[in-house]
Length: 278
Image 1: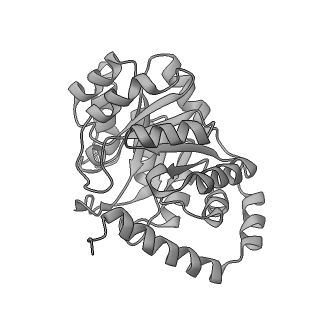
Image 2 (image 1 turned 60 degrees about the vertical axis):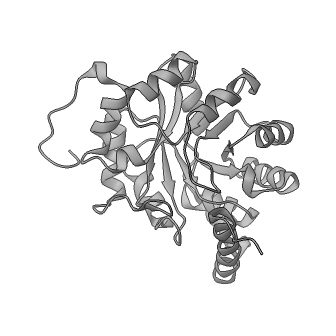
């Protein structure tokens, strides 16, 4: 009997979590909350508009921990981090809401979105329509669909539910087979290429570069994971990739927004900061 991968463990727990949440709050109740949530802020359009100018369109991630690295940031105040990212030039935010493996929380998303004007994606392992409606009820502007976690029928179903409640979709792929499935199944403009293998958690930027020629020009490519320095950024920009999802490099910095600016907008000069998250 093979040992379950990290992703398999996460998905098994996620199915239990969804059942627990559904027992506490019905889908009908969630749908009412979703209808009364603030209007979406246009996650996809914000990224597309920035990338069209050949300027970094950065999805800055708010993440306390991960299965591979443990706790990444001890001093973790989502509202402060969101304001710091906005000041540093982020286009959008990504907020981890998975509790068991990433020490995330629904409240983190609500706190981050309330603290700034940026669109926010709910970063979680979406396997059920319930979670999509829940994301809108929390105030999310976009949801993540991970191809390796879904079959084609479920992927299409979740995307349709997202569209129905006004959410954008970012579809995440890790290899050519997943890319082919995503392009065949979904019409979302946002294609994220995760340079981290979710089964082994190893990272290689070559993943994005290898898949790039196979992605239609009318899709926005977002490179995810492994962007740690200016050389990484320039490697992508030379290949006409201007949209990035970055978390760990920022979360380990004293001031996440200043690190964002240093990494993506060095020409602006760094602000003088008298506090950790000024």
